[in-house]
Length: 202
Image 1 (cartoon, helix red, strand yellow):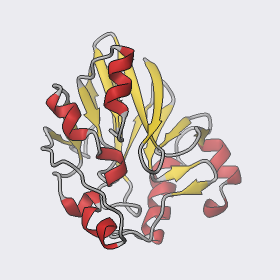
Image 2: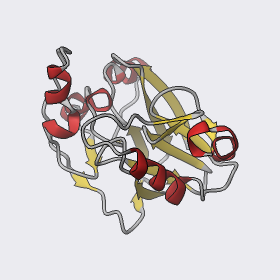
Image 3: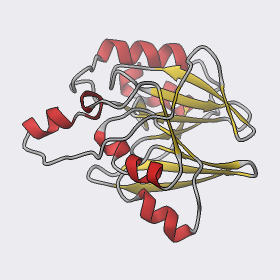
């Protein structure tokens, strides 16, 4: 599998294009990713959403209109996208509504385009946060659960610092130390580096 990263939108959100012989996946859909894909001449078959905060789904409706299927843990909701909250903060954010094609079954791996992806529900930053672990490739796409030497915000609606730390320890830190972590913001890291250096996890 070939992985390429796009960063864009109001708060510099990462999206990841995964190209395989069986089809192409996109992890998250921040603003501008549709134009980036068009510039590359790449068609995406499926979009996997780590969670539905506005910065991760601004291009979700456009991707769906272009023929991609949307996958998430929960159905679309303005509460999940934080539209109501951010408008109350004076930020004119508007997410075009979309419909999720496939809801994740958290009790079994997601099998798609010849890949097997282990899913983990890790709430605390958002109610619907899911991580995607590709064991064969040693790669984890963590959304906004864990970053290089940091963790996701827990002061947003539905957030819980205690819950997030519990989920990270239960689902992520148990992975092999060499696992490469691709987060929703900032640079990549490894599970080993975060176990050793992340000040929130000591």
